[in-house]
Figure 1 (spheres, one colour):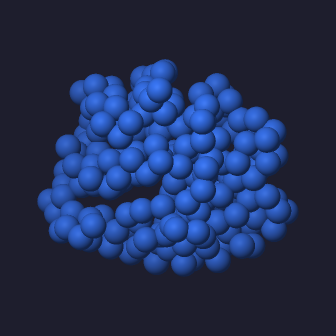
Figure 2: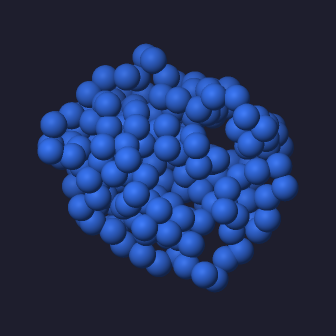
Length: 211
């Protein structure tokens, strides 16, 4: 997938990584791993001991670390070499958590296997809508029977600022706002059935494979 919006989005994020985005942001200070999972995530994802999970846009594994204590294995991917390098260091104490490099537009071939849980947190809001649609379709293909998908969007709640899409001249704070209707429509088009939604500043969606 090659468009001006895709090239711009990937280039912008890779440049932020080069500038030290993760270790300098307050929530990631000094490459901090989270020591617990948020209640909303546990409620929507319902992680189980025999789950194999996949995180789309995993950063350096900050969410994977606490999740690895609750599941059989968790895999993740992101777009910059510095994240893979840092994950190799930070996830040493979590042997069932594994991260690989992705291209920012698709799930890496090495990770295309059935998963009981597929999730993405604070990532889709930074992607062109076409890439999000692609990830939704790929999620449908790799989600195991009775599997769960949990997607976190920036909610287009009318308060903004946010963009309609990531384009060369975007507006707001570099985040795409999604309405509940848009999220439902795109999940349905990908073959996923939305079974639960939570709305606030964020839009949290739980989806399953359509029967």
